[in-house]
Length: 243
Image 1 (cartoon, helix red, strand yellow):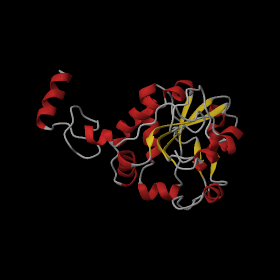
Image 2 (image 1 turned 120 degrees about the vertical axis):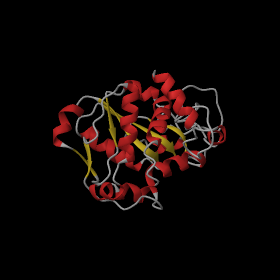
Image 3 (image 1 turned 180 degrees about the horizontal axis):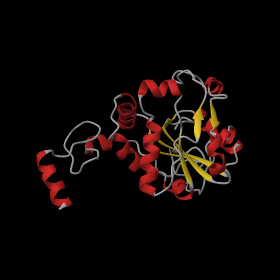
Image 4 (image 1 turned 90 degrees about the vertical axis):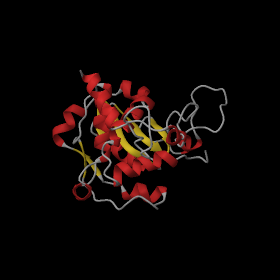
């Protein structure tokens, strides 16, 4: 009966691309044009930052110059795609266009791209918004993605374990050093969540990683609270090291 109902709905309302609204073969999916607009991240990539290398050197685990010069506080970062084209459109529509339905599609792609870190995670946490920004936006896109990923992987989520206590200025246009300074003291771990974090491997979820400053600031606080390790999973990442 469920299949029949789904088929009937599909006849009346044919599935459309979540990005552009064009026709697709299945719901909650991308059309071929938008799919080609994704610069998916696949190996070879930096094992710490998750950013791709331009060439396959035929060597095993590699670190990028950025990861060697400035090792991140978090253990590993993984992302679905480079932050441009379709990936940027999806992030903007989720965050600024009230397209909350996109969290399901993006979360599914993140769970697939981040399977390596997701399998080892014991608890999933979203990067939080400050209360004022949450009040203006009405939702936290990172929490929507974390909930979707947790449902797919069957992993528990702690949506309020990490708290943003500092109303930071927007990160857009800031240098790496300015971003780090802007986020200093921005996060803390909720007292009631400390026992659930201590000794556990955590997966921090966000929509985009630009310089890694947000992931570093959040991971630093979580590790100080006793977490055994913190990895970062985002939908998109900005290519670094000129790649």
